[in-house]
Image (cartoon, rainbow, N blue to C red; front, side):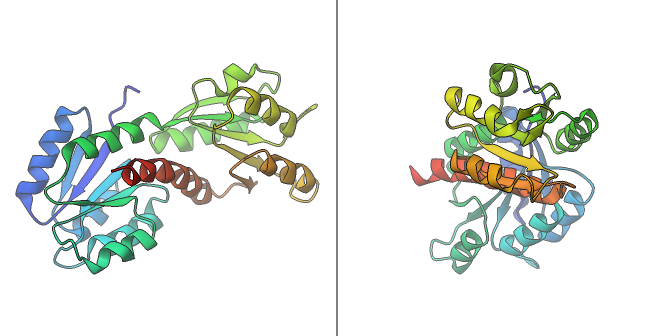
Length: 250
């Protein structure tokens, strides 16, 4: 992807933020720096970031408290915490509240770069819906949040066109004369592990088909009119699990 990953580094130690910013710039990211959680919140209120890397202990709000606010303002944005204190109480608190993980100081730069590189690869979304207006709106919303979006309003499109390059698929369950469930079966035959989020505006009518689709491994079903924060949160949850998988192997 041509657009650089936007990472906000938050630490009251300015030498730390400057050093990490230099490293991330050299690694192809676009870092921002904040020296308190309060300053970070001002920045995320006016600019979209793809990831936040924050110290836990800072004057004022802690990194865990920052994460709570970020989750409200920018749902789905992954937060990594840093600490120099192995017995930090806030570590378990942060993990319970959904942070991706906690990196010990001094930071393992190779691990950090691997996590960010994985996150950078996980930004391609295919939206399959026979409503061109819905596709266009979703495309604009997701592109603003840093995703690369392919929109497909032709339900007869080939599976490769729908899912070949995608990290996530948003699939409407009622596509003119084709059932979204039939499309999902074709996709599962070729891409068994692709995360698929179902969408429909017909909650009651489509309930049996949705249950079947969830049985084929779809992640969840969201209902129109779509709540954007809910969608972004779900995409964030999917990405978080893959990033946590990397941390679990270390």
